[in-house]
Length: 235
Image 1: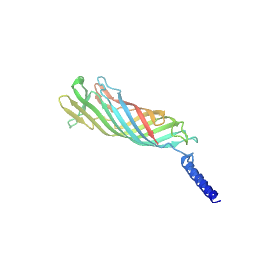
Image 2: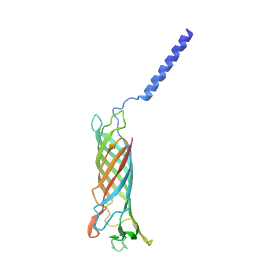
Image 3: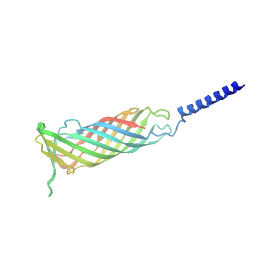
Image 4: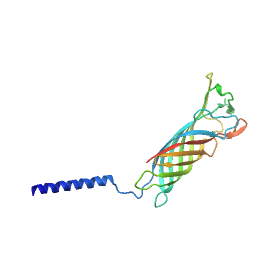
């Protein structure tokens, strides 16, 4: 009888532990889940709408990160929108020289360097605060974080930092942080698609870097941007 009582107590304890482990391994399904996400991306930046004589050289890249709030539209929660806040750092290498104005109404001068062998460095660097707005479709469900996704939308940005830096092989350096005609307010379309964490990302700017008050090689305005790369979503 004593051994039987001990066996009963042991079995009862094992059943209790198993039930507790089962509750830990199989949590209750959340039918009101959201895909709130942190995103991190890397891109190759291509310069479009280039005036005649302007060429892109070297590698131009970008790093992007931020957070997005998910807003599902339907009961299945596979269609909705996302609104977020992010930051973007970008470089653009080219043969355009930006010569600062000397004051007294003198405007910034933009000119192409035809002898690219004379260039040691010619680059734009930009920092942007961004607000992504996405329409979202995915094959997600409450029990799995692995799914297909297609997110398309707009990205509104403000270029709070711009720097043009030119240096020739002789060591002469020119820097400009506030050139004439710079469009600091940025707007572009975006498309992200892929599986699970890894997604292809495309950004196409809807406005140029410089407005039509700027003349670059006999063309008014110019420099649109296309960004191609990978975007990683982290729940």
